[in-house]
Image (cartoon, rainbow, N blue to C red; front, side, top):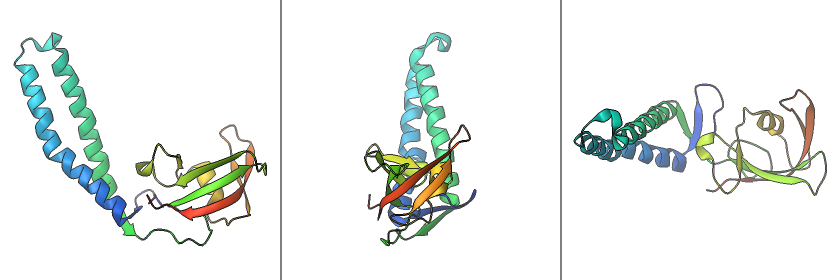
Amino acid sequence: MTQTSESVTWLTQAAYDQLKAELDYLSGPARTEIAAKIAAAREEGDLRENGGYHAAKEEQGKQELRVRQLTQLLENAKVGTAPASDGVVAPGTLVKIAFDGDEDDTMEFLLASREYASGDFETYSPQSPLGTGVMGKSIGEDAEYELPNGKKASVRILDVKPFTG
């Protein structure tokens, strides 16, 4: 579910299938749809003052960028299994932490690549300072990581469970 090095991305089979379906749609039917929008806008006349044409071209650019991102991601993907529910922080786990040992100041986040970002909770990469600090820690252990300003912060691992989607 996450990148473990610069070139390898670990994904569950479900995540791989989801991203592959998105790639198939964007590189097939979605390309046809955007080409039709561009052609229709082109027929409206002067392209310099044609807002519909420029909007469709911008949409096409964003779509092609996403196709390249997904292609690279899936080319370097390794399909694995979901993490074990052994209470150890690993990619693909939901982690609940308390900041500086304050049991009232808590946060739950998913430790995974940004491809797994969800509106339900924060997602942190294992390569992020927080992700690096908590990786491999168990429930009850303290972890330390470096803040962007160079100072150190500590958290306590309160709970760890596999992400089930």
